[in-house]
Amino acid sequence: MGRPTAAATALLCQLGLSAAIQWLGLADSGVAWNESQHCRLLLPEQLQLCRRHLEVMPSIVRAARRTQELCQQSFADMRWNCSSIRGAPSFGPELLTGTREAAFVHALAAAAVAQGIARSCSSGELPLCSYIPRVPLGVSPWGGTRREQTQLFPCALQVLSDSLDTRCKCHGVSGSCSVKTCWKGLPDLGEIASDLKSRYLAALKVTHRLVGPRKQLIPKEEDARPVTEMDLVYLINSPDYCTPNPQLGSLGTQDRPCNRSSAGSDSCDLLCCGRGYNTYTEEVQERCHCRYRWCCSVVCRRCRRSLHRHVCK
Image (tube, rainbow, N blue to C red):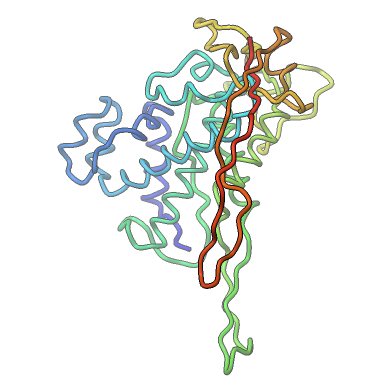
């Protein structure tokens, strides 16, 4: 696996301080990003980076798309379902302030781009990489404010590092493993998203304390555990996301499908915030009574059945 050189690491830093997660707006751009003139479509603070490092843009676009997909998949069963991320680069208040939702999105985006650039390095797409058999542990390319968001980057990259698995290939006569080559492999980004969601659920509320000329993050609650680089942190409490409130970034949960038999976050009780739900019945057709016919096909009948759907009031 290729490792970004100092030049690549410097690039990651610059990306992090340039328009923060507004880079996620590239997910649906529909632009090839293979000519410098395309850079004029970006925000002013992104323009120069694009022109200087055009070859990195495809990796960033892929990472932006994957971040949007995984965020919505990870929170599909919760009141906040990350649907607002589709508005990038225009975000709601919940992603522009120091909420735990913002912490998750920043951290996932950081991991997505770090992984994307690492894989582009290993495939030879990026000339600013060297190729030595070590896994990249650079500075995260997505940022928010310099104080609290830098806490999210070590967390994202530590998750990336801790998730590495060892992969080996055997070399020998008749498949013997007399000689074995092993390397560290990057995990699937879905596994990283799952890990980060667990950290989101256990996120620490923090405040700033002045230590000399610098500010340090400390837990808001006196009896809370100390903040580590593995923690996601947040500064302000999130709304309950039950009812629409544009000022807080809440879209509400009205008309969201819920699971009447679940006891989890997707249950009709929790997802509908106690407002109740409506039940709808619809007829669906599906394949049934399938049998194998020699040779070689499967023949099925078409059956109708009633499907019950539950939707929050």
